[in-house]
Length: 226
Picture 1 (cartoon, rainbow, N blue to C red):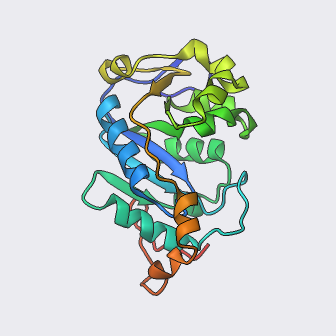
Picture 2 (picture 1 turned 30 degrees about the vertical axis):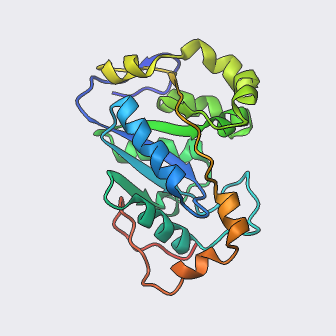
């Protein structure tokens, strides 16, 4: 079974591999979908779950659309793909990624999780609460993002994580994974961003407002406004 300690081996590859992509999704866009499908192919994942955050401690609440609107935009982008949209942090009552991932691993012991993030997040990963604990909880896969790669590679987190790198092919072929583990993914940059979408259409969330309360695709519960 799992242990939370350095260089811990996960159990044999008998479970589904699920990639977890967290974020505000304010709004979700085609770049999120493209990154997710690319990661699935490169890493041999069975699904990707989008963890739509009720509130990111490192981001301002100004301009943040209501959670149901962000969930609906994510579900629209994820349609007809092996992607599930969830606000599981709302159900778990967690605020920080380290706590969320610990709870998820306990809640779904038959699944093997991997944390997906962009190189922009790797550049500031050392600012996250208990970031080393996150790396010891599940493998990390970092997707290149234009303009952030240099800062990510030179950052404090990479100075520690760099010794645990493995190739996508090695991860995909592995029957078990030793933690910590870091996989770097490179693909053609995607210029789309939620910031640009909001700049072009500040009222984007209104199109997702007057609809029934959405249901979480993982917990199956109705999502509260948050």
